[in-house]
Image 1 (tube, rainbow, N blue to C red):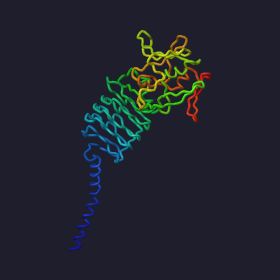
Image 2 (cartoon, helix red, strand yellow):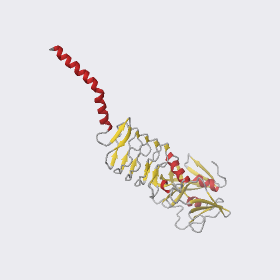
Image 3 (cartoon, helix red, strand yellow):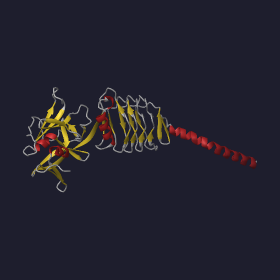
Image 4 (cartoon, helix red, strand yellow):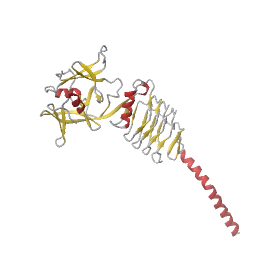
Length: 340
């Protein structure tokens, strides 16, 4: 009796050992489905979404490192998606044809965005791309006949370069245009113009202070580096949408221009960079009656006013700019020329 009992136990153990891989395989398959969420995951990559949720928050404790190619393609039920920290890449076309997708949150761990990831996502009006992203594919966005996608990010990031280059070299491809929006923080600073002290409220964007163009002109009115500013909107002109800068001209105050007024609000704002803005004005400099487009000059439009980096204007008008870090004062010297 004892031998028979031992034999049964031995056979049971052998059977269990043989079946264990199969049982483990079934368990892995169940885990891949993520408890009915509709997410098929393998080796840390989301391969397919078959759910019907309108608001999807992908769990952050599953070790997911990537969103596979076309994983969410054509999921018309999706309205919002939150991708967890730890995801490093989003494959080609992952969210293409998600025509009702309005919002997606990308993690600071993200490094790569593939080709056409958000193509034909008509409802995605804006997206914030973290600075951690270093590689971006082609034709990531397409909203058809709708307005350009607003891309939020930081100056100098891969997202900034992507938007700037796509708009610069492909402005005729309206379906693929984007506007790049940046965070602007009001900053009251001390400024000294030829020994005369004053204060002014500017906007700090990515560590650089942006000044209202007319404020700079106002500060230099009584100097030998004065300049005037006009807006050209005449349809009969070769430039029907341009900001024209006139060096060595007396500044003419424009009623309502408010060159020395504080910004309308003291809150942090988001504003589009001029070089990527839809229908942005061109920047021209007029010397001896000849107008010339200014290349590689960046500006933002906030509350209807145009803000420029002080050094960009100094380089154009040729006056000296320096910063006293100890006293936290910006110095403008119109007796000297511009120097880096």
